[in-house]
Image: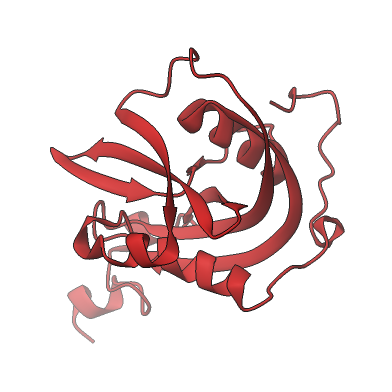
Amino acid sequence: MSPDLHDASPRSGQPPEQSSSVWCPRATVACVVADGDRYLRVEEEVNGRLAYNQPAGHLDDGESLAQAAVREALEETGWSVELQHFIGVHQWRSSEHGHGVLRFSFAARALSHDPLRPLDTGIRRALWLTRGEIAALGERLRSPMVLLTIDAWLAGSRLPLSTLSSLLPQDERACG
């Protein structure tokens, strides 16, 4: 057997020193926040282009998935939300950065809005759009998960929040 083949990992084809670490996808959260037939959207600048997304972002260390979803909604839109249901987990490979992504999606209810709250860097504004208006954005959607999560919610995907559990200390991170 040639040294090149013997030294490569059978799965990745990478040398053992590069394949010995465990592959870790990016863990993200997102909220479907509906008000009648309109959905809360984020208009943001991503790599020099305008993109549209749900309130969404990365899970921080020490934070539960539910805490992350509430925090991201507030930071990106200025809306305080209450989680109502767990929609599901969606997996994909981002065409933006090439990393694997696991998105944990929630349905939430808008509680209150702080129009003076500064939004996260890159966020231009929060807006409410119908599903049709969102679909018409086409390539301007940040990812295919934007419509996928709305459609899952519309199809009735509403699992109890107790579907997810966290063994993190409750007071480790404040929720929102």
